[in-house]
Image (cartoon, rainbow, N blue to C red; front, side, top):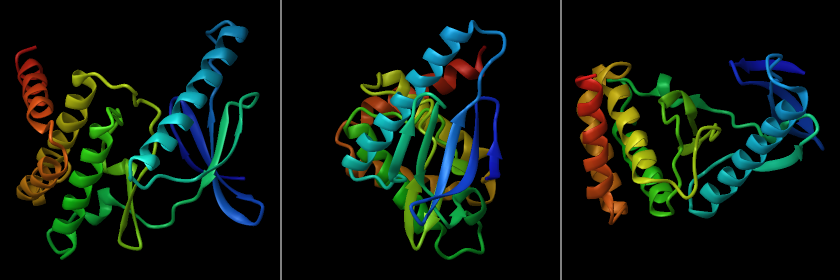
Length: 203
């Protein structure tokens, strides 16, 4: 299989599952941990991520379909999402940028309305596929998520628009308006995100 992405915790490879393009995410063993504990932790985290992917989809958020789970190998075989990373699509010269931001806000609101946090909500973990937004990599997510977890999601997005997407930073307002329109509990989450931002500023 061809490696698509490699991180500190996992490697993603391109594969084929019953004739369908697939992505295989395998959690890497850690030599510094006791082998039994390491297998147990990796299996637990695979199960948790698979659950979050399913719960997010049931909340109306596009995520990759899960084809298979192998707890012995600590891997998830899932649908390969073909498309453009939102990281690359959010540009001033892209007329779809505002629409993408509105879709991000609506998807995040659906997650948070079910008390699901993503945990690593950067535009590298979002793919536009035929006009539809797909969220990937829920390895740091939680359910039921605390207000702190939900606030971190909003904080990470805000920070991304201030740094990586400063060219279109004004569109963050459109994102947040879509979030507020779709999450009746938005005030509490935004207040927590503001608190997290202040903490970072003074620590």
